[in-house]
Image 1 (cartoon, one colour):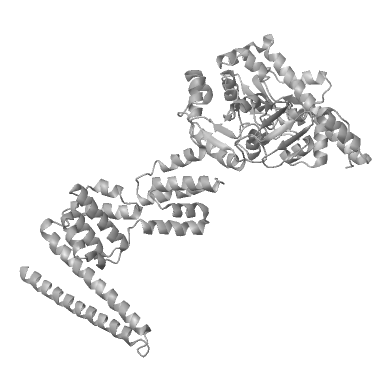
Image 2 (cartoon, rainbow, N blue to C red; image 1 turned 120 degrees about the horizontal axis):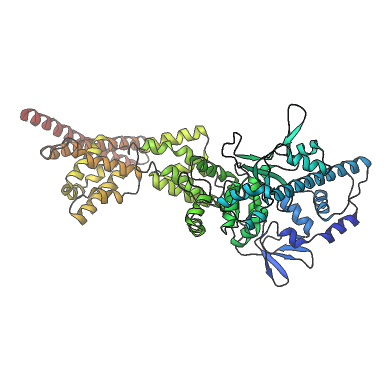
Length: 612
């Protein structure tokens, strides 16, 4: 393809209105002789992006982006310079000469092909519109009236009517010189098995799909026949000039409303879009009957950074709402969601409750990520550890879609709080591979099996929670120093303070003051022990307590002996005789203490034997 002559580049630039072009992407407000808005090239809350129509340039004083309309489109669309010039040349009717005959022919065929496509689509659109407002369109107008869609809205969206017959559009376009093969490539007619053609849309209200530049690219149709055996909704196939995942139904009409209200309202169907516009909600669009794509999300992002998803209230609508999340997150948009009861949809809701009721729902709409997490977490709050861990895969999938570290951290903390899990482990679970997730899952299960208290330590906890008046003696005798677990020492300290304040152990209040989930579970289990069949009846509590304390003393003594022996091995007698002798003395004392404990244990066994 040849170079574009400089004279042509300058001619296209002179004919192009930069303000009109930029407004297809950015919501602008007049600021003196200029216009300003939020920069599309970086995130900002205060407008620093200016368009100067008189000079034909734009400039952002936040990120520094600036230039003429060519630079703007190249940055927004990712086009090359020649692609940008050719796009604008097509719009303003400037012919671009080519250097070689092959290039010239290829360019001519591309231009002519697109021109023909847009012409035939406009012809079809006008034919459908004329049908709707003719005597033949009475049945379609009655249908629209029943759906609460008035003439003004119908005309704004270019609604039409495909007559009940096989070849009405086919014959109409033939009389205007269009060949059936061209109509077929445009998706307006279909071929039959006899080599002929027939209208794709028949006895349907027709919705033109129009891009932001005002070009008709495709159609959708809704059948009027209640007993219609075919599909209720029928859409144009994708063509060389139309990809459904790149367009939003109603955006050509809604873009000004989106800019004004500073958010897009996304619904599922064409009728929802039209009905909500008719009710005054003129920021409404729909994703062409497919899952919302990143290109569609970015298209909305040109006009406003906030999106409210309002899909149908059934399970299919729920799943479609969830599928929006990756596209909206990738586009960097603030996504919120409103939901309806099962069987309800935006159109039905507005006709029943009114536009103000829907506006209230929009104002109260929670963030999409928050709603998605809530529907998973709410069913397992307070459930078993297995039930809570079981939902982490879904939680992780959602958190992985959140690109902003701060926002993801916020949601991770909230999920961890509601599931009573450690935030750090929930974060690791969300980020890690399948193998890593298995590891974290095992750690969570181990964590919630309770701390590694020995049976004697757990026994002390159970007895002292059941007999809290013994807690003062426990600490006065410094028995807390016998504990291997610092967690248990903290719990017993907390229980003593609680008993001092309330003169009893109030289980629910005590648990409320314990921060760690695994410790809460352990204390909760210990509080319940005496209620399970009298495991620790009052007459045995003291003896059981003394047995546990004796075991704690013996284990403490063994730990001290092991420690002192290991220290002695490291001491050089010749160089540090004092330390060696001091450690030896301490070890002898500990061994004497162990012998005394052994004798105490033997006496206790004899006494118990005689009592038995």
